[in-house]
Amino acid sequence: MSNSSKVVEVRGISFLEFSGSQPELLTNLFSRMGMVRGGIHKEINAELYHQGDIHFISNPSNGGNTERFRKIHKRGASAIGLKVTDSVIAFELAIELGAKAAELTDYAIPAIQGVGASLIYLVDDNAEKYLFGKFGFQRTGVINPFSNLVRIDHLTHNLNKGGVERMCQFYEKIFGFVRVRSFEIEGKKTGLYSEVVASRCGKVIIPLNETKDDKSQIAEFIRDYNGEGIQHIALASSNIYNTVSTLSKNGIEFQETPDTYYEMIDKRLPEHPENVTELKKHQVLIDGGEAQGGGFLLQIFTKNSIGPIFFEYIQRKGNKGFGEGNFQALFESIELDQLRRGVI
Image (tube, rainbow, N blue to C red; front, side, top):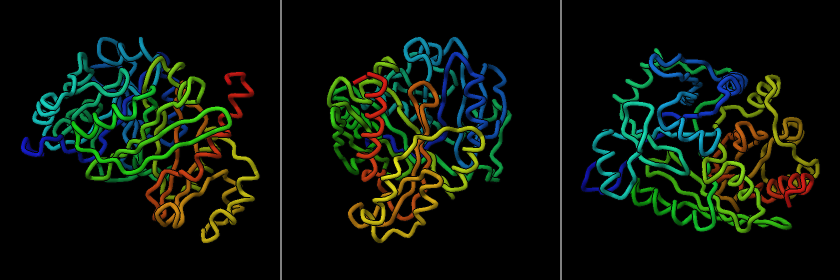
């Protein structure tokens, strides 16, 4: 990163922070997901969980941004730590480029305002070592294979009308992200528009979703969440069948997929290499093929896990998409649930 480049160069995701008034629920959730507790913060009421290169912080403490975050959103993903070369230089450049400095922080790391009431911490190697050290945690290079989770694949933002373009410009201007794809989803009564931005290093990918009406699942999220925010977090798995089997035994609940979906797979993706019986058994979705840029991906979504926030588990087999071919079916499935609940 240099001032001459006029963007803050990102090198990946250091951590995600979550906050809620009932931290025991997060402890229970992360444990069932196969995350290992890496330690308790020495100064504030926070805990670190990890698996592979995934680091989650549960922070219900008061006095910092998480307290402000809970007053607005109640619970959710309250911060993301983006890896940079130099935290101080990155912060100064971000402010110069128009980012808003965080009014309150929970850690001694420079931060700017992110989506909704969340923060973006700018984390260099020393800052990460300092932060994780506060939990008594040190990187060992050993990957815990409990549920085959290896890294954060992507995370989405749910936004108000007009929010996609606004946040695209934010990530482009501050971090030099590029737009990699866009798509629209139409249900029977509602719809959404999505544009995907990615860091130059390719390790930070953010689909930005905006509602096309006032009753879509995006609009419902914004009402429940009391504003814009991170909607779901996708975790990459090295073996999604093992992941689903393990997490199901641990009590993680996944969204159901109609049997008809699996009946259509061979027709929709005739060249796919998967065993449809195994896909159906684990309720895993498949997408890809030449129409989606080649290769395939396997994915599954949980039910809402932290308020309106849910998780996705994904295994990429040469495909760089996001399951666009599955979105329509999933959108209609969630829309059906909304109809049953009388939301639309």
